[in-house]
Length: 411
Image (tube, rainbow, N blue to C red; front, side, top):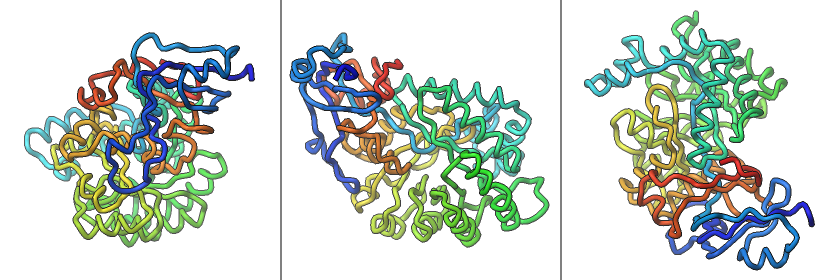
C-alpha cells in the first residue's frame, strides 16, 4: 500500500458521480463530500471519502495537504478546440465588429483560408510551440484533457504535419490532447475539383495513414454553406466509420442539416447547434449523439448561443467546449465561456459543471475521466473557496489554486 498517496482536505469535493448522462440536472443532485479527500494509486483514484478517514486508513501514505479552503472538481475536459494553428485573424475580428458577416469575410480572403495559408507556411516547431503555450494556459484554468483538430492544412501533407505535431505535443504537455482529423473543414481554393472530389481524395490518401501512424481515431466534417453538403458528408463519414474511425460533426452553426447527418451516421457528437430548431432538438434527444455547444464561437461571432436550455429540457446530453481557434473563438477560456452561457441559458451549476466534466468526457467517448470516483483518472481542479457556487458566480475570474493530472500536481 506504500504506493498510495492522499490529498486533501477539501472544503467540498464535487465528485460529479452518479449524475444522469442526459437531460436536466439540479444542484441537489450533486454529490458533495465535505472535508473530503482522495486516495490515489498510480494515476487513478483509489478511494474517495472523508480526509480524516483516508489518513487513518493509510497512515503511512504520503500526503499532499491543501493549504487553504479549496473546492475540488474533476479536471475539466474541453471537447472541441482548434489549438493547432499559426498566425492571427485580428483582421477578421475587426471586419466582423464593423458589420461584415462570416461568409463575407471568407469571400474577401479572410476566414479559414487565411489560417490555412499560415499553417501551410509554418514550421512544425512553431506549430508545436503554439499548441504547448495554449495547453499550458488551459492547464492553469483547470483543463486537463482537450480535443485538438487539424483542418488548417487541407492537403494530405499539411494535415499530417498538423496531426504529427499534435501527437508530439501530447507527449510534451501535462494536458491529454485528443487528436481529431478535420481534413473536411472546407474545400481548399487550390484544389482542382469540386467538394465531392476533394473528400474522395482526402479519404483515399489520409485514412490508412492516420490509422497506421496512430495519428487520430476521430474524423470530423463541417456541414454548412461554404463547406460541405449533407449528402456528401454522409458518404465521407460512412467511409470513415468503415475504416474504424469515431465520428463527430460540425453542425447546425448557421443552417440546419448537420445534426441530422450526425444522427444518421451514429456520430459521437455534433458540435455548434446555434441554428438548431425544435425539430433538430427533439431528434437529438431521441439519439445517442452528444450535443456539444460552443459559447466561445457565439461570443466571437456576436451571434446567439446554442439553445442549451432547450437541449437539456428535451433530454439531450449537453457538453460545452471552447472552440478555441484563431478566427471565431480566440478567447479559449472554457470556464469563462461556460459561466456566461449558463447565465444566458439559465443552466444550473450542476448542468454547467457536467458540461465540462462528465458529459464532455462522453462527447469524446472517454470513459475513464470526468468524475472523481474509484478507478477514474486522478485528474482534479481545485478553487480557493469553501463554496462551489462561488466558481460560476465569478464567471471564470476565480482561478484554480491546484491542478492534478493523473495524480501529480501540475499547477
